[in-house]
Length: 204
Image (cartoon, rainbow, N blue to C red):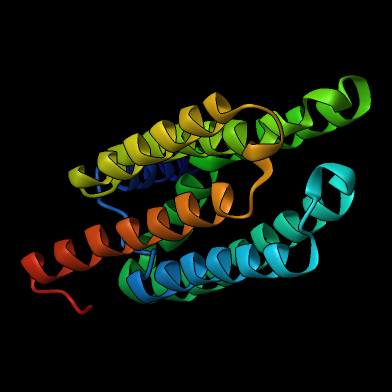
């Protein structure tokens, strides 16, 4: 039995090593472009229903957190089905690896939001910029198993996040301070994936 357990352990290690050295193709360009559309739509909704977000910070957070949840649910569902089809036997390891790359960023963003709202609500205007900076770290972390040009998306989110923080005060809560960075950023991610699929002869 010990030999059997050792053999199973070796197989598991080999599968994990193969997953780490394989480019992840579970992200679909069209789906990620759609999440960029969600960001633009959310910005339009905020501009129409919430012209003064600084006075309604919880409603502002509600719009963008709901947008993030919907985008993550759509991307996650498509990632699961696509990875199952493309990566076949390695799909579980590949999906787990993809999720693990972004979990620290998601956790950090959630905790930062809670801390700012609970202890320094006057600094809540920093949240859009900080979200973008944290998201950029998740993108950078994922770059090792995605197409190399994906680093451009990480740089985009980092620069837009810093620019949003530099705006300071109420201007940082503008609907387009979130809508444009994430709308353009997700379209950039989709474009990188689409071009890489075309170069490899894979489906778009």
